[in-house]
Image (tube, rainbow, N blue to C red; front, side, top):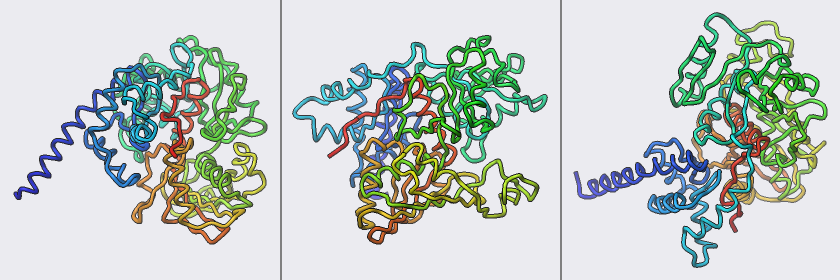
Length: 482
């Protein structure tokens, strides 16, 4: 082996050793303070040393240079000398802001000032109980996210799931579906089933499984559940009358629907209109996966360039309401085999955008094509702008927005000639702009937005849940970079 090869190998081992030291520090910050650390949006919590190194390497795509592990170690050490409240903390952006605005202060002093914002939230004492009504694709992903967030002990507590009994092995089968997922992979942790008590123990989170057919006739207090938020992910009821049934059950305080609501129910897209949620609103809806993916991008484009009108075409993975093989279906075309066909269908996403972003009411049309993939979809935004621009200008704007705006939890940006849909499985952003696909001719703009219609949407639902509970962590740093 050459001297250069030996040197490279030793340098790698040194980086790996340093990254290994991060693991307990990252864990302590999360468990003791509720701080989730990241590098330009790439989370460090529950990562291996290799994962930590990859997150630092990702900074090269953002700033042109790899973030030194030594700098992150300084931040982690300083954070543990402070008493931060729950926060979503981007170490790369903190360091960048420190360089610009530190003004001669020590890193610890600067962090102390910035972290003062993390104590603004006033979550309910002891946290907020959450019940998942339904346990399908979205329900199980919500469970995974809530379980992963359960290490801190405050905030949201997954207490129960409610389903209709499907057979003698119902509990074991449902636990198995939580443990193994053909799209999202195995559950990260351990799961234990107690058939006598009807419970699932997942990574220390004890989940009561309640079998019921009537959403209005459950006594949740019999299981020690009080003032709960019920997340209805069945899609069976979408208006106020139907969803109000949950409020008649003892122990329920509020309801969140994981679908677009009908009538006057507020459709909330986190990052856009979540601040409109009030304690008096007992029923809130989290809109659709497509609405969550496109609304943030449409908002920033409208703010910057003005959207005169546009058409949204969704290329959407098939869903469970389609048939695997040709058979009767009450919906048009959805009776044809989802695994063999592209299926033209309707989408209400374009109209639903206006409920979260009223300024665009009447300016958008939409349609959808269901395609034979199980997850990850794409929205094609074909827009007429109020002023001319260029492809490079738009891409530069969207890239900066994804990194430095208040919507950086919702919007991601990528430029790669090799990415395909499966590369975005597990993304916790609402949508990812594919910069290389952007087309622009003066006022005419076409933007392609990828989105994990399961996991990305579920992440948005959890953010709405946290807002309803008053426990959404502060995003640090709050300052947009100059």
